[in-house]
Amino acid sequence: MNQSVRLAGTQGAWIVMSKARQVLVGEDPLTYLPRKSVQEYAKGRVIYSLEEPSDKLHLVVLGRVKVSTKSEDGIETVSRIISPEGLFGEAVLVGGRSQGAPETAIAMDPATLMSWTRAEIEQQIEREPRLGIALSQYLVRECIELQERIESMAIHKTPERVILALTQLARSMGTPLPDGSTRLASLTHHTIAEYVGTSREIITFQMNRLRRLGLVRYTRRYIDVYVHALEQMLRHQGISVQPENAAEEDPARRLAASSTGTA
Image (cartoon, rainbow, N blue to C red; front, side, top):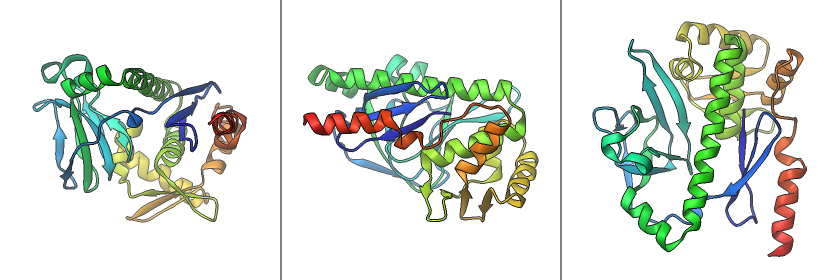
C-alpha cells in the first residue's frame, strides 16, 4: 500500500512511496485552492449519492467521510475513507453533476467541509495554472492507490487483505502512540468489511485473531494497530509492503533538506 507524507519546508509538496518503492512527488492542491466558507455535516448525513450526484469538489476540514459504491446485486464497497486535508468528489472535474461517478459519500463523524464548483476550480486554474498540475498529480496518486487495492483484493486471501487494510488505514489516518502502536478513531467491523470486500463476520473473526496475537487492540472508540509487527508478518509470508521506516528514509529527507537548503 502507498503512504503519503506531507513534508514541512517543501512548499506544500507531498510524497508517496508505492509498494514498488517508487517515490512519487507532487504539489499539494491545498496550496492553490481558494479559501471558502465551510459547511457542517452531522454524523451519518449523506453528502451526495447516485440519486443526488455531487456538483462540487470537496475538502475534508474536520472529521471523516466514507466514499462507497454499490454493485447491481446490492453489495457495498468502501472505495476510500477521507480524513482531514483529503479531497473527494473529483468526478465533477470531468463531467459535472449529470455525469458524476456512481458513488455515495457519507459523513462518518460530524464533518466540516469546504467545497468548490467546477466553474470555481477552472477560474482558479486560469489565475493559478499550478493548481491544474497539482490536481492532476493528486488524481494520479489516488488512481495508483486504488489500483494497488484492487490488485490486493484479487491476489491476496482475506486474512492478508485485512492486515493490509489495517496498516494502510493506520498509516494514512492514525495517530502514533508511545508504545509503538498507531491509533485509529473508531471504525466498525461493518465498515472495515466494506473496505476489505468481505463480510462483517469474517472481519470480526480476523480482528479477534489479531488481538489474541497482540497485534491490535480495540474498543468501541478506537483501534490500536501495531503497524510494523503486522508488516513484518506480511514480509514473512512473501508479501511486498512498504520498507521499514520508509517515511523517514532518504527520499523524503533529501527532498525536505534540499527544499530547505534552497529556500
